[in-house]
Image 1: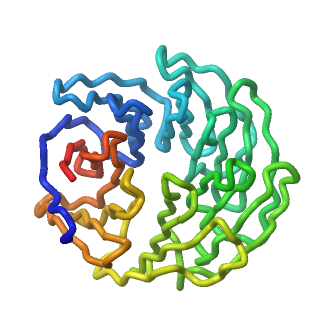
Image 2: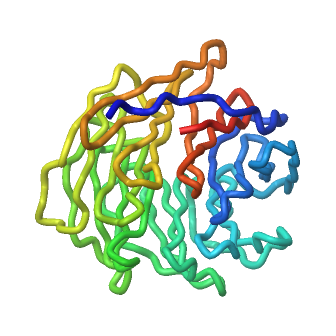
Length: 293
């Protein structure tokens, strides 16, 4: 069965700042974007062009799976906010360098943040932080929870994947994954697979249920570097955002569909919606678009 074509549904909003991160609410009714202007934009996905914003709140953002919290960061300043009212709840005074990655646990009770030389685990209900042990001098790019929130998985600029125990804070495994900087990381809906993309123009799929499996399940070579990656809700396809294009890859057949968006001069961020039928893109062209899968 061929990979479905990617069809542009509508332009949800055009905002006044380059967009640097993208997430969606658990019900899929809203998307939230961080921006270079540090303004967080909330946009309705129903095509109503309803846009709300909070100034000076974040370049990097993440929405908790229970829908209650928004984590956001401007450089090293990290906060947690109420997702309904936008009220800031806590500040976390721990990072010395810019926060580059944010991720919530599956139940939303914890979230992790990473940046250069740094990885932290936080409680969402109070400003409590655990420092995770991070060797080396790499820039830590992205982080995710795995193993029913027992471990953290993180990728860095040295092409390595690391795993941390959330109880002890210790690294339990590290492996070479890419030749150079890893820019993207996503975990499948069932938590059994992860996908990474690097500046080596390779997309690699990993089994994370068993850390003894050292080699990737599959490797896809791309003509471009990707800015973001995520699994579709079905779990057997991934979406990759690249320069002026979006690529969908079927992990079973290896087939792919590339949709170019000429003239945008942007690297696209991608985020599937929970309905399994749509996804959203955002980028430095300041435009948030809704697509059909």
